[in-house]
Amino acid sequence: MGTKSLFALSGKLVRLEPLNHSFANALVAASATDPSLYKWSPVPQGKIAVDRYIETALAWRDAGTAFPFAIVRVSDSEVVGSTRFWNLEQWAWPEGAARHGRHFPDVCEIGHTWLTRSAIRTGANTEAKLLMLTHAFESWEVLRVCFHTDARNARSRAALERIGGRFEGILRAHRMATDFTARDSVRYSILAQEWPDVKNRLSQLVAQTRLLP
Image (cartoon, rainbow, N blue to C red; front, side, top):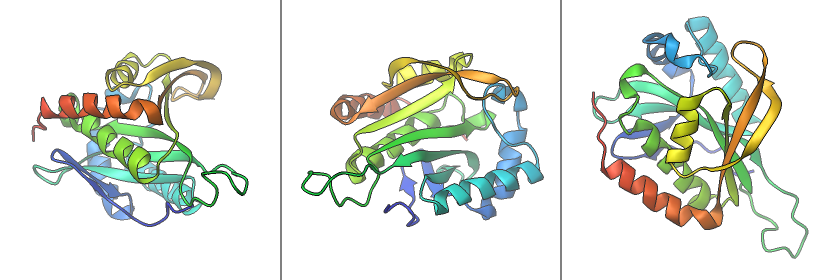
């Protein structure tokens, strides 16, 4: 799959830079500002956990199933979090099908997204989603992007609905939660035919916000 080449995504508020170990100390600092934010999200705390987090992300990238980023604030070049494409799927289209022979994912998920306290409610998440969805739908030409969040995570659910994610349902005992229980996951998705309207919505939201240092 043609996803292993490193690429960055740049906006006016944030840059998404390919994750590597050079970001470790900055991510340690970013996640330490307010650990209470991450009750429902698996965000690493401390150098050992961050190193392991990056190693896992890079192993998935090398396997062709994920592409992780550090989220960098444009105004001061501070690392304010992380996000990634993952569950990248390339379907086995038969010869003669319109999508046969493609080297990009057919569908993907966006997740493992977290921000430091100072970047919450600033437009960082909205623009990061705009950048990633634009790449997924317009460069990779995916058919669907999906998102999952813990059913108890009201803030994440509201954010996904705000950007235009369509509620699909609840997957029971879907993944291990941060409290080491079997969590129920709420699933949202955006389809290729819905993307123009979602893009317009996200662009308007980004235009109305600014990222404060």
